[in-house]
Length: 340
Image (cartoon, rainbow, N blue to C red):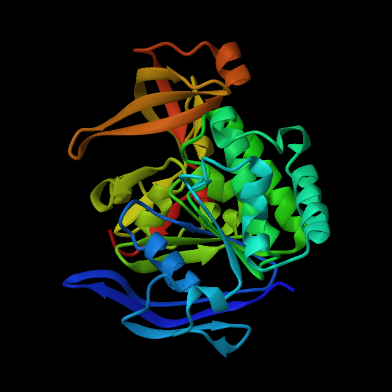
């Protein structure tokens, strides 16, 4: 059965270094949650506290309303998967997955059945007898996932599990992990610094920075309605416009205004809302072109706006560096922040 988790006022201090500062979270049973943030923000520390590998300096941790703050890892029934795979090099893939079950003295017949099902789930039935050294990185990570699931844990912890893999394998494994998580209905918490992973995999994202939670919400909420400049900047690309320029360009009285590059309209003809600028650079990015437009003001100087133009539209319009264009920032697409 999936579990719910509650983090209540949790802090962690290592000597004088504050790794977590009064973190409060609730994770629902069966939910896939990503802890997202830059290196050193506290996300891996939080995962270790949930697992029982470290103890909090303050606060409590609850699993299904039971206080587990001081319980050892062995009494929390979790599966964990690391970036490094951590497979036993001298054991076959099958024996790596079966290892935890053998420690629990489960009958050989039951081990054969359970491990066999897991190898079908991870699509590696033909690789059971291989050693880790005979497998690719993606295959090793699949085996590590099967091992984490073998003991039928109440919840699954993933610590940057895909960061060592190449792009295509990473995308494939994302889909497999999500599919398995949904099939099993397993409460899953994944640490990542990769925004694409978080946006494509999570039911809910928890964005962290400097030992605190900056915002939590669905991927759509985090992307479309960031609550502060850090989240806006960390998730996706964004243009920031400072207070003086936002006022002169009639964008409001916030300390900072921001807009996503794909939300800006770019044309060769002006309308009453548009700003005149010159194309400074065009960068091909596959399915879109990023166009850098330098907009000038006689008093407040220049600002550069990045505009994402879908590839087909860019191909048809054939914008050129040095060309005069007009950009429009729809008011409904602007994000305003009270503080910088």
